[in-house]
Length: 95
Image 1 (cartoon, rainbow, N blue to C red):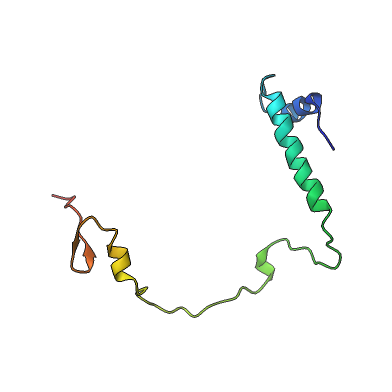
Image 2: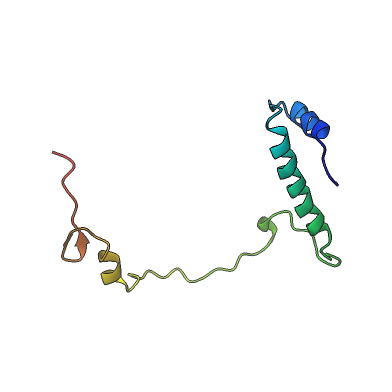
């Protein structure tokens, strides 16, 4: 399917979007590209695959909630312009 300039203007009017004549060719190219992607998706064989409307119906995998220090203290502090011990040193902002 390919959209022509008249269809682009009609879509813009239905969406209540102001489109200048200079914008029509760019929008036509972009919308035809989107329709091309949709045509590609329609070629995918989805027989036997249950539609998924959202992840709320599925059980999400969980991991143990374990507190760690990350083990990369020196790498993190390497970004600090100045440090005091194992902490970032920042200028005082409240008098």
